[in-house]
Length: 497
Image (cartoon, rainbow, N blue to C red; front, top):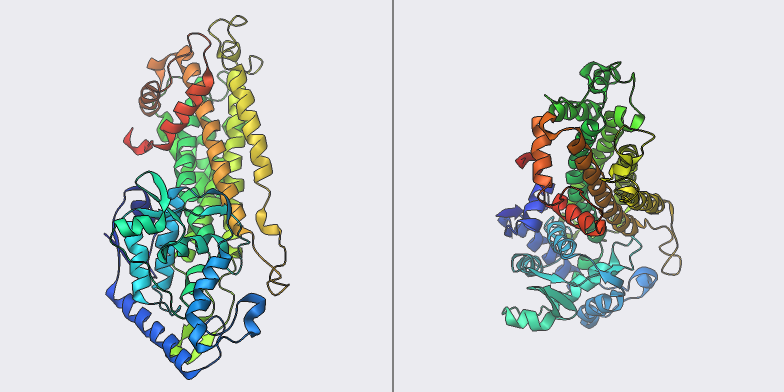
């Protein structure tokens, strides 16, 4: 059971909730703060104080005062009018993460929402009722208004959900589960949709895949080293300590461990003096990507525990401050950085693929073909990898450098962080396919060299991978192998090898 307080949620806990379906609950202490914050809102309404979002309109309508008897209608109108998402829905894992992260943000006790609202969000998580949330339509400032509005609709019995493998009307599923739709009170609609949980949830899911991919990329690269009789000296600890980047040192260490005992690697000067950069610089390039991923992890864990709506309520309602915590710039930068880091892992992987298949760059059969000429072998595998890395270069353009004004220029600078997080996820899927292709080629190369000569760890990896990707004895439809290998990698925990 994961306990939320609004302050201590970690990526590991999120991973357990998202993928291991671990249950979640709110801490009693945090619910006390939530109740106090809601009481402050009730007091503001009863006293007739003019506070943005409680008894005023939104955005450019912030100067429009709302009658006390209309404050509840104001909140429902808000989420209905702002549910303008378009495009394919987010994956269920992202929708699930949005529920979790929005509940955690409200538990900080600065938003004025009732405990029942948070408890309902967590009920949806625990019962695996996931709102259908279109991916497109957020500017990433004023929060992820459109995506979070689709989430909020479900709480009032509107919109759609994914439930037990089907897409259904929310009211139907809530009724089936014995959950009555909620009526929103003052500020609650705004508290639900004014935040960065769409970009953060997408960023979290992307990061968790990226982290796994980054570790796998090193093990695959180690097998490529064996397939190309790579020079182990380039991973000597002294080289990497001389530069001083921890991530580079760590990558080199893992490479040495993977290749320990291998008879297929070589020493400098034995076959050649130096390897090409795509082999020799694995610690420097992969290590730099790890530096970026470490930065991303830090920012995500801060944002997961952040109050990102507006206004925020302090001092039992004596101070209600309008600010800009909904602005997604910190996460926009982070996910853009992740895009570049993973695109580079795919770039260098594709260059290793080229070295594995190009007869001018190795002494292996041309294109790893069992019958060069009659059989094309892995020739077009490299084409596919080249196409994917080229697409990644377009997707890696930073979304965060763009902005466009909205709400009649009241909201005149926005982050585009949700676009960045979506593109990061696409890049990761492409990179996963590139790594699958490198693995397929590396498997074939070490088979030519002699599997019995491999290191213990890479040999174990080889034997497991061969259960999914058979040896290339003759040409076949390699698209099926790429898909199978990519899916296998997605589910693989390399620590189990």
